[in-house]
Amino acid sequence: MSVVVVGAGPTGLAVACALRARGVPVRVVDGAAGPATTSRALGLQPRGGEVLGRLGALGDLPQRSVGIGRVVIHVGGRRAGELRVGQPTKLVRQPGLLVSQAEVEARLRQRLEQSGVRVEWDTQVVGVEQDDGGVVLSTSAGRVTAEWVVGCDGAHSAVRKGAGIGFPGVPLVEGFVLGDVRVELPLPRDAVGVWVRGEEMFSAFPLPDGVWRFMAPAPGVAVEDVPAFLAACADRHAGLRIGAGDRWVWTSVFRIHRRLAETYRHGRVLLAGDAAHIHSPFGGQGMNTGLGDAENLAWRLGLVASGRAGHGLLDGYEIERRPVAADVLDSTSGLTGLVLGESALARVVRDRVLFPLMGLAPVRKLIWEQASQLKTSYSRTRFGRRPRVGDRVAEFASHPEFRWTLAAPAGNPCVSVARDLLGDVREVHRDGHALLVRPDGHLAWRGKAEPDALRRALTAMLDR
Ligand SMILES: Cc1cc2nc3c(=O)[nH]c(=O)nc-3n(C[C@H](O)[C@H](O)[C@H](O)COP(=O)(O)OP(=O)(O)OC[C@H]3O[C@@H](n4cnc5c(N)ncnc54)[C@H](O)[C@@H]3O)c2cc1C
Image 1 (spheres, rainbow, N blue to C red):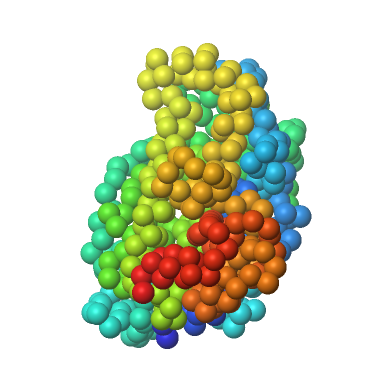
Image 2 (spheres, rainbow, N blue to C red):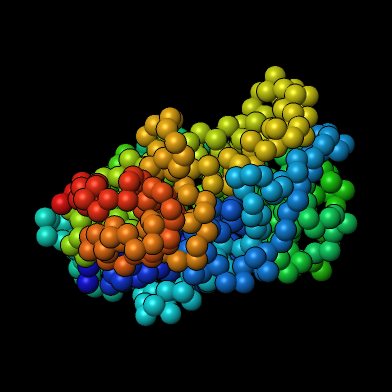
């Protein structure tokens, strides 16, 4: 078996689906007894939706999700303004979706099963050994061998530790609580509510099926006390009453860290998702960043595992994706600091300057485009004609297949070169210059539609 993915969360499932789409045999092992039924992430950003679309795993998620049009901000109990979100811009035409992570994982699992792979549950990885030829995993279900291992086993990754990869960083918030409660509230279901009062903060997100998610910072609150604590917050900040008959679906207590793996690859072991980066949930970026890692890694690993590319092609994974995670760590830490107001001065600036600024159209657009993750470009230059190599090519990125695309004049021989070196390639007719677009929707090459030029470029890219 060439590739073993450890962890059947959104990242691991997406890696496996993308590898199967490229025809690579894969096993997925997970230490849990079965799929998670509760949901940490609830925000599927436009880029995350696009990745699921390419993998054929979006299914009915848009219909199952809650449409959010605004974030309503209250300061000291009074409405202070609202940030409109999800408004179409030139870059972002699709909405973000509020949908449970458990549902995202279910769609990915269904897709994976359609491609002939079932998750192997109850298989906890406890050790990792590797040499030049492959990797041996020690698991609770016995030894598992692989040519390549992708560690998607979350923040406490045993694969990362086993491979000796450091995970430096710091805790950001000592205690945070969340609770999902099925309750009727006198709040609009197209809006997220945020209440701040000095150092205190409380938020309410509408979820599908009449559920609301409450979140608040709360150092030292035990998990069994979360319902009472959040009910008191809801009452004090927003005047919302949670009765004894309202059902708490899930509660959790967690700390917020920001950490980034020292490297994304050690030999034949690669990391993706929370195993490689963790940060604040503010801004809803974690699962979406993991989905972006997954497809970037999978097309490369697919070519390496099938012998079409040298190991050097994998270097581009860390070069492209680690800076994306570093940016996410910075932006989500900044947002957390802003909303929680870490000092008296910071709180005055937050309440009197930053919140009002968020209502302005250009600021709104900036925040929404950044959050959408559609701005992501791997271009190494700021100059040149667009799309530049590394840019997302919007025209092809929304195509619902995880395939290479060659856009060239009809009958042009470049397509034979691309198929010879890459395997399966979709052909699209286009006059003028040729464009070769990667399965993840980013431009791999552009140039005169000359087969020799394309062969030279691909040979270099494939490290052959
Ligand atoms: C409160 C909260 C809200 C959030 N909201 C959002 C949001 O709105 N949008 C967003 O994009 N992100 C959000 N996130 C972040 C998001 O939940 C994570 O980034 C996401 O779950 C990461 O997915 P993953 O597949 O990398 O890891 P995980 O989801 O952690 O999956 C890891 C998998 O590996 C398995 N595993 C662990 N150890 C082992 C082992 N040793 N052997 C075998 N299997 C193992 C686990 O059982 C699990 O199935 C939020 C997080 C929190 C805490």
